[in-house]
Length: 156
View 1: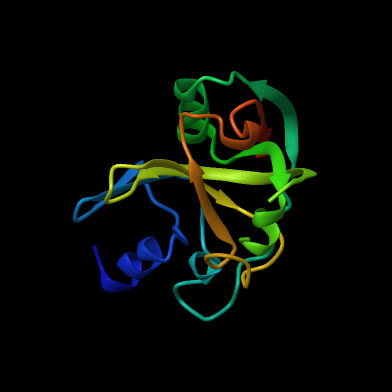
View 2: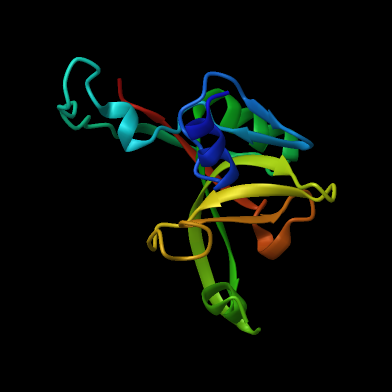
């Protein structure tokens, strides 16, 4: 693994990978094979960017709430949208239900302490949390995160 790739993995800003797990010491991070960074779009022979791809969902569908089904969907087809209850500490990282929010679930992993988590991307901006990404405990349906999962197949 090259150093630049390791830095992205450590920052939880995963580049496009062709496999589902990245071993980095004791940390194993599983990410969608469909994530890509803007730098991947650069033309190798020059510094031109590829024309923006116009992709859209041709079909949206619900994913079952089991861990296996969620993981299989992300592995097979890429990120899924999830909805969950939002509490005050979510916006300020300090309590009370404020409503709901939807984010992109892009992968999962296990911390050095053995804590299993989902890796999510928020659409607010890169200055929020960890460069716009955050983790939430996996397997306990924290804030209802494993209840409402929607996926879509992209146009080709």
